[in-house]
Amino acid sequence: MLAFDHIAMSSVDLAEGVAAVEAALGLRLSGGGEHPLMATHNRLMGLGDLYLEVIAPNPTAPRPTWPRWFDLDNFSSQTRLTNWVAGSKNLMADLALCPNGTGVPMSLQRGDYRWQMAVPADGKLPFDGAFPALIEWQGTLHPAHALPDSGARLTRLEIAHPKAEALKAALSPLFHDPRVVILQGPAKAMRATFTTPHGIRVLE
Image (tube, rainbow, N blue to C red; front, side, top):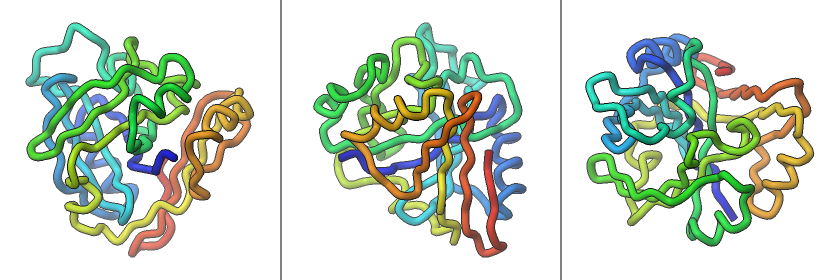
């Protein structure tokens, strides 16, 4: 079974994205770095067994000739929650059970972290990005274990989609976590609820 790994906030500018998330949660992000293969960079926040990622195109890096992950090449709105990521122990086996277009494994690294991630050829994950990206960490290093504990905990991730039942069916053989709730909705939308030292906070 897949495990809940992290959630991703997309932004057109990393500094703006960090400022928006820190204001919404009342907490500071820490850690992160660059992904040269994708020409992106990020900042992170530890959430206990998970982490939150703010990710944006890196303007100082050459734009790749292939689409960036999380469909970032087509992202132009204010910073918002766009994606979630599930951890795999056997990426190829899990991909065989996933919808077409979930992606092809790519080997990546950032600092001491090494991982394989399924990246769609067009950058667009199934169900308009409501289906999780799949990641398989190499070795024992994982950001959630190394980041400072923010004191925040994700209690609920709501994912709305017009094809909610089909999304549930696609996930059912692969993933179960009571924090993730699939809802019927007119369009793909995501809403994350957290407990924090400052009370309940929400990111959308």
